[in-house]
Length: 211
Image 1: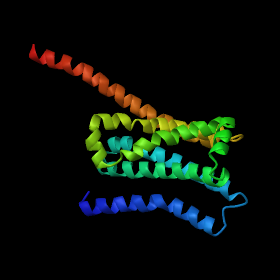
Image 2: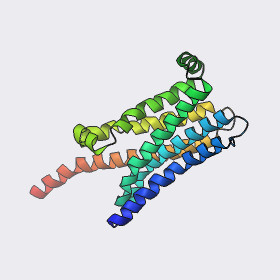
Image 3: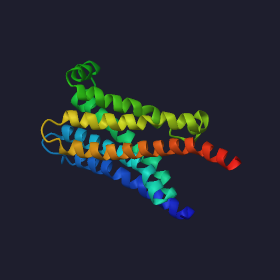
Image 4: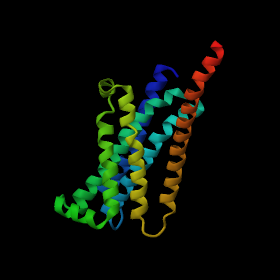
């Protein structure tokens, strides 16, 4: 891919990922969020956070399976948007549903376990967002940075569990998200196993060549 095409692709991802937030803000301004606008906004931003988390986890397997190495740029953008929507999800709940009351928020969390799970998912996303810059990658070093960013798996798992626990009746959609996440994590486990197996057999192969 040429440099100009890559810049266009980056801009395309950046703009399109902001479209849901723009539409939500516009509908809120126009009072078109339904009978319970706060609940609608909370659910929408939560869903978007989960979608962008899964899209972030999709980038690596898609790159390796397709050979489209250029798409790696989108992982950071998608991850930051996942954090943005997760933070908006919490702030709408904290600001409009709990009236910025810390005590009321903590009391609600104590009554509803899914809020604790969701808060855990948001909490582990904070260091991922903070260390997403090139400067932080250099400061931490590639190995430590990659280890830290495995917290994205924790955030995604927490997000799916949070969604499942929050739904009272029809759990088909949370289970669909869980299925996609299971496939993405399963692929990573298989890749890790394959790499470890290759690392174990390589020294044996070298010793046979020497003999």
